[in-house]
Amino acid sequence: MQAPEATREREARPLGRVDVPASVRASRRRPPSSRTSVSGLLWLVPALAILALFVYWPLLQNTAFSFLKWNIYSGQQTFVGLDNYVALAQDPVFWKALGNNAWYAGISVVFQVFGALILAAIVEGLRSERWRKVFRSIYFIPSAISLTVAGLLFYFIYQPRTGLLNVFLDQIGLGRFDQAWLGHGGTALFAVIAMSQWQGFGYSVLLFSVALQRIPQELLEAAQLDGLGPVRRFFTISLPLVREMTGLMMILTVSGAFQVFNEVMVMTGGGPDNASQVLTTWLYHAGFGTNDFGSAATIGVAIFLITLLLAAAQLGYSRRRRVEW
Amino acid sequence: MVTLMRLGRGIRTTAVWALLLGLAVLVLYPLLWLGISALKTNSELFGDPFGFPATPLWQNFVTAWKQGVGDFVATSVSLTVLATLITEAISLWAAYGLTRVRIPLNRTFTVVILAGLMLAPTVALIPLVKMFQSLGLYNTFWGLLILYTAFRIPFTVFLMRAYMMDLPREVDEAAWVDGASRAATFWRIILPMSLPIVATTMVLNVLQNWNEYLFAMIFTSGTGVETLPVGLAGMMSRNGTQYPVVFAGMVMAALPMVILFFFCQRYLIRGLAGGVGK
Image 1 (cartoon, each protein chain N blue to C red):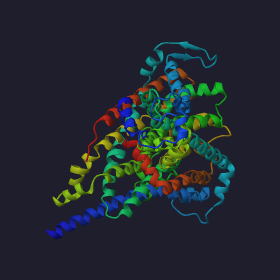
Image 2: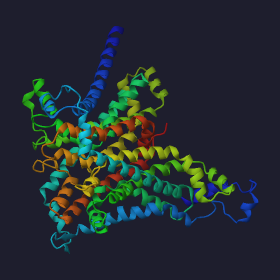
Image 3: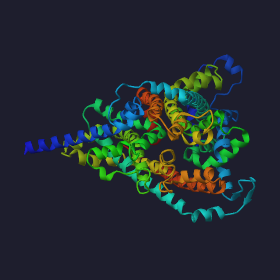
């Protein structure tokens, strides 16, 4: 990147044509773009220092920890090689958690990527700008609220006897479907995921709305003149033109689904009987429930590898040429 | 034929509005229910969950405030303000250095700072706990402040860098010609020109810091410096809970961010779009 930038800067340098004040000439000041400035690194020092100390160093340490066995009583650490990894691979709860994260990712992609995209297209198709704004704003409100507060709210809504959901089902005559939504192994995970869709879909709708607004109106109008209905217009014009955004949202949503923590922790803590355990809550359990730092670090490495893979996918995706219009 | 088409369109319009309004109710009702329930007595809440309170019990808010929410708010406000301001300052300097100063190894440093974007905080959790325990930062306000600052820098620099790259190169040259030092150029020219992106990142950072749970729970649980999300979760799980009082606390946690969103929507949307679209 050095070469083209240098050329551009040399052209932009005003020296030849501008009347440089005598004071400036006398002080032997160099124009800011004329040479590489080592002292310019000072601008980066605070950011680099804090990141190195509190983000990258712990990350390296975590990898090192995953090869250790910790004795919680004596604090003694022993190198055990890959023992923690072998143990993790044989841990059924780890695979259960991984599967739960996959459910989380799959359902979130359906609702928060494709559902949100369709919804955004419907909202943006409204004639009245005021109503478009109203719906976008309303749908976003839960995203401004913390997942913790939303989780606590739904924890109450899902309560078996007094919770809003069961009371509502009773009143409309569907009482036979009443559940201890969070206390039952078959429903706990999905109850949490449902809350998460409620909380997060408006965020995606807002992002897709921004992407859809960038599509030139002429394209849509031309298609309309050709007799294409709104559904055909969506599939032939809007969808291809927001493909990049859709891809990115998919990667971000999946990556987020493998890092989910707050709502699971608040609503079920991974229970009942590990039914709604996810990777991060299992890491928390290993680290702070059973004080097994070695295996907690190993789960950390697994999360790191998954997110790294998805980040690489995202990078590859955004490097690809954008659709120009 | 024409009537048929018009009928079809009518049905479609109705369906669209039914869907949009239905979803709006689905989103708003639980929130309104939270607000209404916060004004009830415990027996009203359990006796008639859908009804209105006989008399709105504003006292619940006072009780919640006295039962700890006041302290949580104080912690959350100071943490959010300080962490946001420090993150903004450090990120502005870094973005300035990366975009407006010719530093050696520019590309390397850019990658080093932005790579932090992809790291899940959970991955660093165990070592951070160990480190903070030995530094005496575990269970302190300052520990949390450091974490909030550190983990928001990559995203903030990412947005600021993209913005500053597009500022015209000529302004730095002009400042130099006028005899301004590099620091003066930053403070008097680039910073004022970057205020829109500062506003955007501030809104995003305030939202994130106010709502953060993972670090807050692990690094401050059971201490005097719990943030709102941690404190409310603690109140909820206590035995013999007066639920309406907790709900009042939840309203106090949620309302400021909803208001912030409505007032700063413009900045927020630009930040979200820039954060994903680049």
